[in-house]
Amino acid sequence: MPTPEMSMDMTTVGDTGLLDTLQHEVAVFARRAEQTRLGGVGQVRNSMDRAAYLLLNRLDSEGPMGVKALAASMGIDSSTVTRQVAPLVDTGLVKRTSHPEDGRAVVLQLSPRGQARLSEVRASRRRLMAELTHDWAPEERDAFTSLLTRFNGALSARQAAQGGPAEQPPVS
Image (cartoon, rainbow, N blue to C red):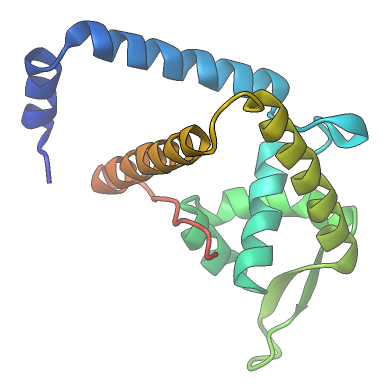
């Protein structure tokens, strides 16, 4: 595991021009992604914020779970999940149900409406990704996806090493 001192050395040993370009492009990507929310195309474009999408996606991939388990799997604290889930429950995308083994505990579950909405948003975002990369070769799409996944993993590991929660990748 690299130490902070090693990280500092890597910026002086490597190509600083390349690292400057990389940090700039990541900053531009973050800004543009937030501006467009990479929401997709068509009527559902920008119709679901990032937090809602990630929560619904996690519940879809991992199934019903309590707030603490959902927070841990996403690398955020329970109070944040509680705050972000409230409007999803209010709009009927998520439902609260009793835990199957402990009726006193509450679990969050994707509702049929939430499943339909998530499918709609995923399809829209898939169309956007296809549009943005229409002139890329399949191996370029694959390489970009692999590298972006690796980059996100490195960010998550760094956050965990610094004592913050690290988002776990969704179960495929």
